[in-house]
Length: 184
Image 1: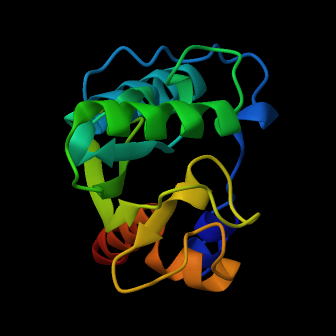
Image 2: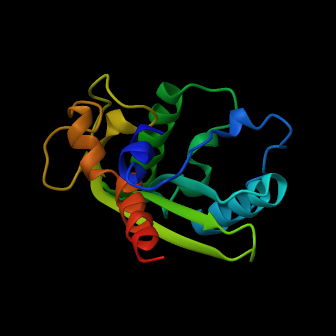
Image 3: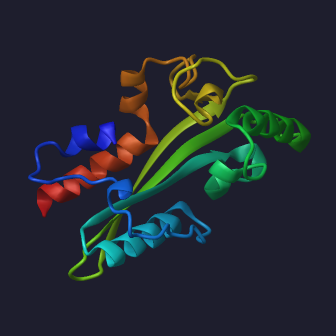
């Protein structure tokens, strides 16, 4: 939310969290791609609230795992396990794959839904990098301690938050949404 507030501060908007709209049911993420899930969520929340809605879907895609965990990043290994367990599973799966490539990327798609027309615009941000041999750093969340962005030796978990924000897949998608809003 901090990234969003900073990027959209110049617009006469009042940003609201989903938790501020208690009568809205949770959207089901049934898509097979980040874009499908972001659009599903944006349309769901837009139709229930009657408000312009920005929704995102994001995750980690690892080449050695055929793009997994992908849209299942938050549920990789099953519900109810910690990210430490998810990271251990990811490293084990990479070892078992026999693929020495450690290439990976964080992907974020943001969908912006118009309540008057039902039209949706999407914006994708990607941060290329590789997977570390073991988790490093305490910063960030999720898979951040495993992900080393291109051009850096530290993981997102080790980098200062300002650097991570500048490089992140979400910031890149938000920058595109920002440009779209400036033009419209």
